[in-house]
Each structure stands twice: as C-alpha cells, then as structure tokens.
Image 1 (spheres, rainbow, N blue to C red):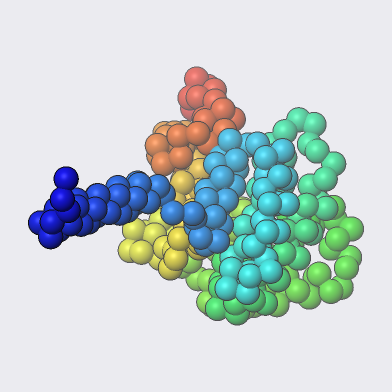
Image 2: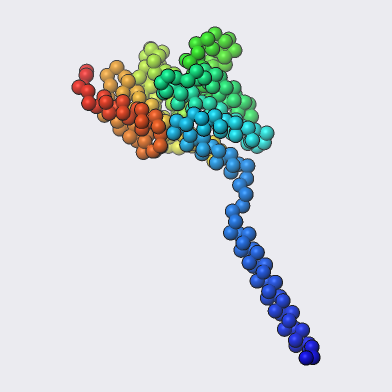
Length: 283
C-alpha cells in the first residue's frame, strides 16, 4: 500500500486527538485529587481537634495535641497561634481535671506550663490579646491549685501587670469577661466581685458577642466564648446565695445547643441543675 500525503495527514490527526485526550484525562485526574493541606490548614485542623477534645473532657488527647503543636512553632508566621493552641491544651486539661474526683495531681504544673506558653504566644504577636487573657487565667489557676505559686514574686507581679493591662483593654472582650468572672465570683462585692456583679458582666459579654466582639480575625484565632459564657451563667445562677434554677437551666441548655458534646455541661452541670429543680424553692 502506497503512503500518500493524505495518509500521513490522517495519521498525524489521529495522534493529535490521542494526545489531547490523554492530556485531558491527566488533567481531570489531577483535579479530582485534593491538594496537600498547607501548614496553616494543618494547624487549623489541630485547633479543631483540640477544641473537640476539650469539650469531650479528653485530657489524654489534649496531652497528645500539646506535643503535636510543636510541629508548627518553628514557622514564624504560625508561631504565635501555634503556641496559643499548645497552651490551650494545658489550660483545658486543668479545667477538665478540676471536675474529676479525685482531682489529678498535675493541675498546678499544667497551669504554669499554660501560662508560660501563652506568654511566648504574646511575645510573638503583641497585639494578640487572647494570649494575655490565657496567661492571666492560667496564672490564676496556678495560684488556686497550688497557693505556693502565689509566693513567687515574679508570677505575682506578672499577673498584676496583666490585670492592669487587660483591665481597660479587655473590658467587654467576651473571653476576658469569662476568665475575669471565674476569678471574681468569690471576691467581695465592694471589690467588684461576687455573683451578682459577675452575672452582670457575663450578660454584658454575651451582648457584646452578639455585636461581634471577640470574633476571630483568621481561622487560627480562638472562636470560643458564647457557649462558655452560657455555662458560667448557668453555674453562677445555680450557686449564687439565692439561686435561680430556671435561669441556670436556660443557660446550660443554650450551652449544650451550641456545644452538643460538652461533657461538663451535659454530664455534670445539667444534672446538678436538674437535681436542684426537684428541691423546694428557698428564699
């Protein structure tokens, strides 16, 4: 069979069509695969795991995530937030451990570790107010679980400095109000503390939340606060001298609606409120 110009042209056309089809199939296969997650996306995923473990009261998982956060601290663009979430695992290990019977022996040590990591987070981003809030809260927990920490002049001066700093700058910040309220609940009313003052601040913080206060500026920023304020309101209404069980129930139910897997709200606080509902009202 003689090879003509038409035969060559036809063969070339077939080869081109085959090449185009092959390239199209390769492009489609590549597009169907999810791209590898970036370091910020990996840190965001770790943040979500940490939050879930906190609500579930899983102290062992929080300890694992504390170590996993180390993978991000060498990246200067992520260090501040990586250290925040690293510290957060210890913060929530302490708070969850405080609800266990008997309480674990590591609560004071974890509190100090949290405070130290929060300070490093703040050093990496001076404008990151949540790191200072976390350090303030964790130093307070360190003093509570081991009063000997309150004899350390450097730590005492540091919490005073944070209080002076956050006093005006943190006013109205929902997470600061939440942290301040836990410290102030047992303080005398003449010093601005006590259940009624704390409840007023919590309610104001919830109103501020609805106006956008405390919302994250990026996916790596903390976004918690609304459920936590509702839980603290429920606790406060339940434990004030003249308790209001109906309001305690309202706020714990709202917290569980916002965080359905929250072990403390669902399995500890709400049963306490339900037991109080069955008791005669006292005035």
